[in-house]
Length: 223
Image 1 (cartoon, helix red, strand yellow):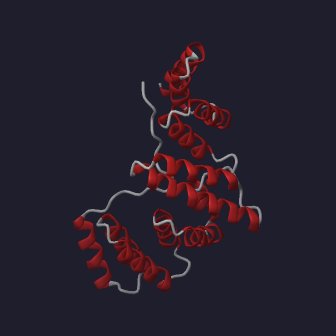
Image 2 (tube, helix red, strand yellow):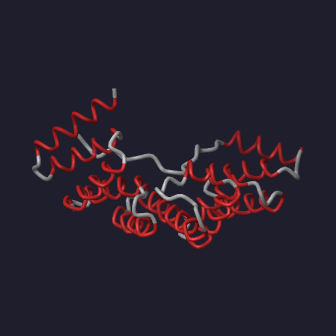
Image 3 (cartoon, helix red, strand yellow):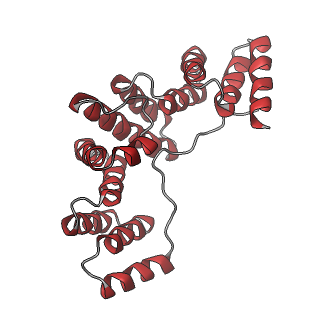
Protein backbone atom coordinates (compact mmCIF):
# COMPACT_ATOMS: atom_id res chain seq x y z
CA UNK A 1 0.00 0.00 0.00
CA UNK A 2 1.28 3.46 -0.87
CA UNK A 3 0.07 7.05 -0.64
CA UNK A 4 -2.36 7.91 -3.44
CA UNK A 5 -1.74 11.35 -4.90
CA UNK A 6 -4.85 13.38 -5.55
CA UNK A 7 -5.58 15.11 -8.83
CA UNK A 8 -4.80 18.80 -9.18
CA UNK A 9 -7.73 21.16 -8.57
CA UNK A 10 -7.77 23.33 -11.69
CA UNK A 11 -5.43 21.01 -13.67
CA UNK A 12 -5.90 21.01 -17.41
CA UNK A 13 -5.37 18.57 -20.24
CA UNK A 14 -2.17 18.98 -22.16
CA UNK A 15 -2.43 20.51 -25.58
CA UNK A 16 -0.56 18.86 -28.43
CA UNK A 17 1.21 20.45 -31.39
CA UNK A 18 -1.76 19.80 -33.68
CA UNK A 19 -3.99 21.80 -31.35
CA UNK A 20 -1.46 24.65 -31.38
CA UNK A 21 -1.78 24.68 -35.17
CA UNK A 22 -5.55 24.51 -34.94
CA UNK A 23 -5.65 27.43 -32.50
CA UNK A 24 -3.51 29.46 -34.87
CA UNK A 25 -5.89 28.72 -37.72
CA UNK A 26 -8.88 29.78 -35.61
CA UNK A 27 -7.18 33.07 -34.71
CA UNK A 28 -6.40 33.79 -38.34
CA UNK A 29 -10.03 33.26 -39.29
CA UNK A 30 -11.54 34.96 -36.20
CA UNK A 31 -8.87 37.22 -34.68
CA UNK A 32 -11.40 39.06 -32.50
CA UNK A 33 -12.67 35.97 -30.67
CA UNK A 34 -11.33 35.46 -27.15
CA UNK A 35 -11.70 31.68 -27.21
CA UNK A 36 -9.09 31.18 -29.92
CA UNK A 37 -6.51 33.20 -28.02
CA UNK A 38 -7.33 31.32 -24.81
CA UNK A 39 -6.77 28.00 -26.56
CA UNK A 40 -3.53 29.30 -28.01
CA UNK A 41 -2.45 30.14 -24.47
CA UNK A 42 -3.08 26.55 -23.40
CA UNK A 43 -1.05 25.32 -26.36
CA UNK A 44 1.84 27.60 -25.48
CA UNK A 45 1.74 26.35 -21.88
CA UNK A 46 2.01 22.76 -23.05
CA UNK A 47 5.14 23.76 -24.96
CA UNK A 48 6.68 25.47 -21.93
CA UNK A 49 6.34 28.95 -23.43
CA UNK A 50 4.93 30.64 -20.34
CA UNK A 51 5.33 34.28 -21.38
CA UNK A 52 3.73 33.57 -24.75
CA UNK A 53 0.88 31.83 -22.91
CA UNK A 54 0.36 34.84 -20.63
CA UNK A 55 0.31 37.12 -23.67
CA UNK A 56 -2.31 34.94 -25.38
CA UNK A 57 -4.52 34.85 -22.27
CA UNK A 58 -4.10 38.61 -21.89
CA UNK A 59 -5.17 39.13 -25.49
CA UNK A 60 -8.27 37.01 -24.90
CA UNK A 61 -9.13 39.09 -21.83
CA UNK A 62 -8.52 42.36 -23.69
CA UNK A 63 -10.93 41.25 -26.40
CA UNK A 64 -13.54 40.10 -23.86
CA UNK A 65 -12.95 41.15 -20.22
CA UNK A 66 -15.79 38.88 -19.13
CA UNK A 67 -14.28 35.73 -20.68
CA UNK A 68 -13.60 33.95 -17.39
CA UNK A 69 -11.82 30.80 -18.74
CA UNK A 70 -8.88 32.96 -19.86
CA UNK A 71 -8.75 34.68 -16.48
CA UNK A 72 -8.82 31.32 -14.71
CA UNK A 73 -6.06 29.93 -16.95
CA UNK A 74 -3.90 33.01 -16.49
CA UNK A 75 -4.42 32.75 -12.73
CA UNK A 76 -3.36 29.10 -12.68
CA UNK A 77 -0.23 29.93 -14.65
CA UNK A 78 0.60 32.86 -12.38
CA UNK A 79 0.24 30.54 -9.38
CA UNK A 80 2.66 28.02 -10.86
CA UNK A 81 5.12 30.87 -11.47
CA UNK A 82 4.77 31.92 -7.78
CA UNK A 83 3.25 35.23 -8.87
CA UNK A 84 0.61 34.82 -6.19
CA UNK A 85 -0.77 38.34 -5.97
CA UNK A 86 -1.49 38.31 -9.69
CA UNK A 87 -2.99 34.83 -9.41
CA UNK A 88 -5.29 35.96 -6.62
CA UNK A 89 -6.48 38.92 -8.69
CA UNK A 90 -7.48 36.58 -11.50
CA UNK A 91 -9.35 34.20 -9.20
CA UNK A 92 -11.17 37.14 -7.58
CA UNK A 93 -12.28 38.23 -11.05
CA UNK A 94 -13.52 34.73 -11.90
CA UNK A 95 -15.45 34.49 -8.63
CA UNK A 96 -17.16 37.78 -9.44
CA UNK A 97 -17.82 36.95 -13.09
CA UNK A 98 -18.96 33.34 -12.69
CA UNK A 99 -19.26 32.18 -9.07
CA UNK A 100 -20.77 28.78 -9.95
CA UNK A 101 -17.89 28.00 -12.33
CA UNK A 102 -15.35 29.11 -9.76
CA UNK A 103 -16.81 27.20 -6.82
CA UNK A 104 -16.92 24.00 -8.85
CA UNK A 105 -13.14 24.32 -9.22
CA UNK A 106 -12.02 26.27 -6.16
CA UNK A 107 -13.23 23.71 -3.63
CA UNK A 108 -11.94 25.50 -0.55
CA UNK A 109 -14.87 24.90 1.79
CA UNK A 110 -15.79 28.59 1.68
CA UNK A 111 -18.69 30.40 0.04
CA UNK A 112 -18.22 33.83 -1.62
CA UNK A 113 -20.68 35.60 0.64
CA UNK A 114 -18.73 38.84 0.80
CA UNK A 115 -15.56 40.50 -0.45
CA UNK A 116 -13.47 39.07 2.38
CA UNK A 117 -14.53 35.50 1.57
CA UNK A 118 -13.86 36.03 -2.13
CA UNK A 119 -10.32 37.11 -1.36
CA UNK A 120 -9.78 34.22 1.07
CA UNK A 121 -10.94 31.70 -1.53
CA UNK A 122 -8.70 33.23 -4.17
CA UNK A 123 -5.65 33.31 -1.90
CA UNK A 124 -6.17 29.71 -0.78
CA UNK A 125 -6.56 28.48 -4.36
CA UNK A 126 -3.43 30.35 -5.47
CA UNK A 127 -1.29 28.78 -2.74
CA UNK A 128 -2.79 25.36 -3.39
CA UNK A 129 -1.91 25.45 -7.08
CA UNK A 130 1.62 26.57 -6.36
CA UNK A 131 1.86 23.63 -3.95
CA UNK A 132 0.77 21.21 -6.68
CA UNK A 133 3.40 22.65 -9.03
CA UNK A 134 6.11 22.19 -6.39
CA UNK A 135 4.87 18.70 -5.53
CA UNK A 136 5.07 17.58 -9.15
CA UNK A 137 8.71 18.71 -9.22
CA UNK A 138 9.63 16.70 -6.16
CA UNK A 139 9.81 19.70 -3.81
CA UNK A 140 7.67 18.12 -1.13
CA UNK A 141 8.77 20.32 1.76
CA UNK A 142 8.11 23.52 -0.14
CA UNK A 143 4.76 22.15 -1.30
CA UNK A 144 3.81 21.45 2.34
CA UNK A 145 4.52 25.08 3.21
CA UNK A 146 2.14 26.24 0.48
CA UNK A 147 -0.61 23.82 1.56
CA UNK A 148 -0.31 25.28 5.06
CA UNK A 149 -0.66 28.79 3.70
CA UNK A 150 -3.75 27.71 1.77
CA UNK A 151 -5.24 26.37 5.00
CA UNK A 152 -4.60 29.67 6.77
CA UNK A 153 -7.10 31.24 4.38
CA UNK A 154 -9.49 28.25 4.17
CA UNK A 155 -9.27 25.97 7.25
CA UNK A 156 -11.76 23.44 5.81
CA UNK A 157 -10.02 23.09 2.43
CA UNK A 158 -10.40 19.33 1.89
CA UNK A 159 -7.84 18.90 -0.88
CA UNK A 160 -5.27 20.95 1.02
CA UNK A 161 -5.63 18.77 4.14
CA UNK A 162 -5.46 15.62 2.02
CA UNK A 163 -2.41 16.69 0.02
CA UNK A 164 -0.67 18.07 3.10
CA UNK A 165 -1.24 14.79 4.91
CA UNK A 166 0.32 12.92 2.00
CA UNK A 167 3.25 15.36 1.91
CA UNK A 168 3.90 14.95 5.62
CA UNK A 169 3.73 11.18 5.20
CA UNK A 170 6.35 11.30 2.47
CA UNK A 171 8.51 13.50 4.71
CA UNK A 172 8.22 10.97 7.54
CA UNK A 173 6.19 13.30 9.78
CA UNK A 174 3.57 10.70 10.58
CA UNK A 175 1.78 12.43 13.47
CA UNK A 176 1.18 15.50 11.31
CA UNK A 177 0.21 13.31 8.35
CA UNK A 178 -2.39 11.45 10.40
CA UNK A 179 -3.75 14.70 11.86
CA UNK A 180 -4.42 16.27 8.45
CA UNK A 181 -5.70 13.07 6.87
CA UNK A 182 -8.08 12.57 9.79
CA UNK A 183 -9.32 16.15 9.28
CA UNK A 184 -9.88 15.37 5.60
CA UNK A 185 -11.83 12.26 6.60
CA UNK A 186 -14.07 14.32 8.89
CA UNK A 187 -14.69 16.79 6.07
CA UNK A 188 -15.54 14.04 3.56
CA UNK A 189 -16.16 10.67 5.23
CA UNK A 190 -17.31 9.14 1.94
CA UNK A 191 -14.01 9.71 0.15
CA UNK A 192 -12.20 6.45 -0.64
CA UNK A 193 -8.88 8.17 -1.41
CA UNK A 194 -8.90 9.86 1.98
CA UNK A 195 -9.53 6.57 3.78
CA UNK A 196 -6.80 4.80 1.79
CA UNK A 197 -4.19 7.42 2.63
CA UNK A 198 -5.24 7.59 6.27
CA UNK A 199 -5.01 3.79 6.47
CA UNK A 200 -1.47 3.87 5.09
CA UNK A 201 -0.33 6.62 7.46
CA UNK A 202 -1.82 4.76 10.44
CA UNK A 203 -0.09 1.56 9.34
CA UNK A 204 3.26 3.34 9.14
CA UNK A 205 2.59 4.71 12.62
CA UNK A 206 1.98 1.22 14.02
CA UNK A 207 -1.76 1.73 14.52
CA UNK A 208 -2.69 -1.44 12.65
CA UNK A 209 -6.25 -1.93 13.93
CA UNK A 210 -7.32 1.59 12.94
CA UNK A 211 -5.46 1.22 9.66
CA UNK A 212 -7.34 -1.97 8.79
CA UNK A 213 -10.68 -0.31 9.49
CA UNK A 214 -9.97 2.61 7.17
CA UNK A 215 -8.59 0.33 4.47
CA UNK A 216 -11.76 -1.74 4.58
CA UNK A 217 -13.85 1.44 4.35
CA UNK A 218 -11.81 2.55 1.33
CA UNK A 219 -12.51 -0.77 -0.39
CA UNK A 220 -16.25 -0.48 0.32
CA UNK A 221 -16.41 3.07 -1.02
CA UNK A 222 -14.41 2.18 -4.12
CA UNK A 223 -16.84 -0.54 -5.20
